[in-house]
Image (spheres, rainbow, N blue to C red):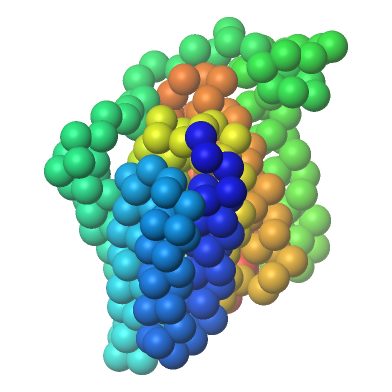
Length: 265
């Protein structure tokens, strides 16, 4: 791959995510699109990765704008959150349609996980130590539960938790499924196939954190989401299936709801 142009395109894409997350003036969004096009032509880089990044930014801009509209016009916060998350299916459809129109092949890997595949340390595919992906997944779940348990057990209100059980399940199913289909199921494999796995991993993981800044998450927790996006991608890569990261994401979302991070109670 031609590193300067593609690296520059990735940086502009991330800047575009920042601009959209901060709900800057539309002029700034247009400047980001112009910069993507400019870098592509100036460096004579392959146009397809830039095209996908542009489609994603356009769809994400519409998603954030619709989220703002919902928050202003829908009084039921829980309903607004579920509708907002549900609209991610439109962005997924836009990327899939773009892949079809450009004859770009990719797979979401909606298949049975290969739990016996191994993850190596420190370089994932090679290193001085390895464990089966099933153990890595188990340790990730345990770490998530431990990380949220203090807040849930010491600051959570049990009566309030009982009232939001149905919301917690609905939110976790919708959000985990659609976010994983979008980030690890669509954008990650498309960029990995057109550019490289490392490029796709870095760009999508950082952008995943910026996605959550657009949802009102403060910077430091959002940085944690970027790290989480990295782990979700590794779980998908090594298990050769999207289902394990969806399940891990689902568990984390449940813990977040019961911690009061998604819907204050």
